[in-house]
Image (tube, rainbow, N blue to C red; front, side):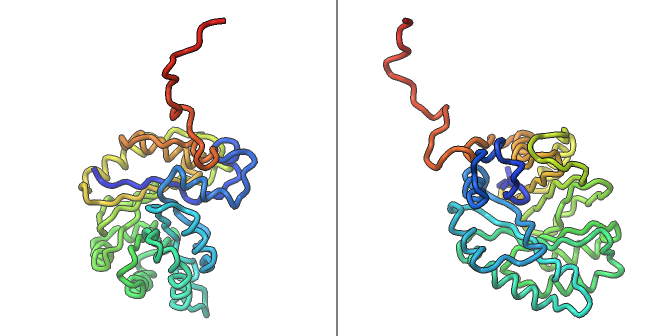
Length: 280
């Protein structure tokens, strides 16, 4: 079986209070509580602005050994505006996240391109990005325009050992091409759901389809990152638990995020050796 890391896109959701985090939890506690349950998260905020070195260091020190962050590359790199400097934006991003990499907690970085980004207009930009990102960084590339489903795209990604992201999105059908040494899956969904405190859809068929795709194209040495967006089924942690169920992985103790550090779950308490007390 591949080595799975299943987590959510982000962790700072007030809608999770009372169902994942305790009701009184402060936002500053969310990451440490999240990392008691999950061993990976995808950072979405880095798409809009690179985290500061201070913030990256705090994330690294807040999480336990073995935890991994995957981060989206800033849009100033993937969606450069006229007069912008994507190379400088990329250098700043990689420099700022160095505390995470130095701590051994950096997973793949993710280049997310918009649905309008076509091969005809964007092949040169993609090739430039693949050259600019040092090879010591694992790279996943999310393409959404159908013009990219072409052997020339797959060869370009394979030359860099960049993984084509297997996105689960309405009206986007990413082919099951392995282009990197790892697999990166994003269960995204649409934007119809606006509250994220419960499961609101049953997308087990789509998850089962992805399980079959993964199992047919990986082996025991393959790292698989599976990231759940709140929009997919309505509640990221619960959706991740369903992924683990469908993938035949051990369930997680979601209640650990609500307990205080070191507090035992109810099932962890040893049985009373004296047996139950007599009635009366």
